[in-house]
Length: 529
Image (tube, rainbow, N blue to C red; front, side, top):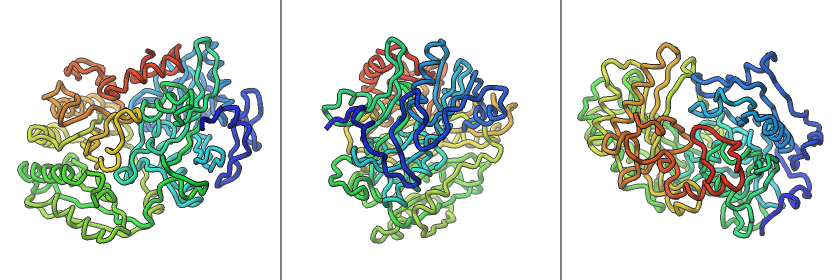
């Protein structure tokens, strides 16, 4: 049954872990529950620096006329309406982990900060868990697990905000077993702007008869900051029945086997490196089916520059699976077979929530970065492995850089390419290329290195992972504006197809309906139809 916004606003308060979570207030009303009204922070306010420099990438800093701290959808409506009326560019920030300057754009004059909207609770009317867009993944995990023993299969870094993470698709250590975050998304609440410049709040669900269903679909991988301002998500696993909240989302494993295998660069020849990467790829090609016993395991191979001293294989495995330790040991042995360098292996049996909440990002002064991403349907080719080795061991580069290969597939690949806005549904790896540094004087050196690295790995397809039998484009939550530049994308494949493939025309139609004036835009946002 479709649920109208009017029907939602008439429901009783939702049950939350830390107190009542209530429906959004009208734009001209006080926030329910005694919370403070929206706060405007301008450049002469000491809080301005705190709010404009809290992004992940120190290469970018916001310079808006004002930051608006909002506490309800009503606040967002009013702030957006005012910005549109005044002709000022507006955007939104939740966790602040955007890799590019999509939020910290000099053209943005009003920055909406939803980080104080962080309530997590169960909504009995929608029979789903409501999560405000400013909640971090850590807050989401803790509230769901302590309250009901359930979780959403989402990202590893607990400081990431729910707002942008979910809109971009959302994946993490439990995705091989339970799918992407958006595979469990039931509804989304979004402040949109019509052709007359009027801001309104829309509730969109996945129900087939919901007239706003396309807006829900667009938020299952279409990216953040492009259709409106998300204020709340609701989660319920498709097919979950009954009214017991503890049965409506996946249950995480009570314990994990977690650890890593380290192959030291000292003594690791090119032949040994090639064998290691080839073994790893071949193993995943064999073990990424939905029925694999390794669906309970997630791993990431960090192919790092020698500055890091080691190649690292990080592993998380459901410790309650029969023969879990044997399966893990056999995996490490398969990856290291014939390499000729003995890895150091460290594995611990830990509690799921304790370990999950400990996964924090520590920049330690190295807060400048450049990132790129991709999907692999098959392992790297021999030529690609050689390109990776050349880049990592480049004699003139002494910084910290890497490509990591995160295990993918299994349950993720059981969903149709057009069922959500995420079209990449037959890959075995998600890849992330990055350089990280601290000194602004080293910007040019690091940017040049990671750009050439990426271009050379995909030299056969014009410098980008253009979709073919081996690779499948890019991940919008690893945004990279270089894919719009013909100097770095000589593939002839437009950037929109790299991210969204055949789903892009539908995303454009949603954009045209809900944001016809292109109010919400950035360098990689969906264009109006």
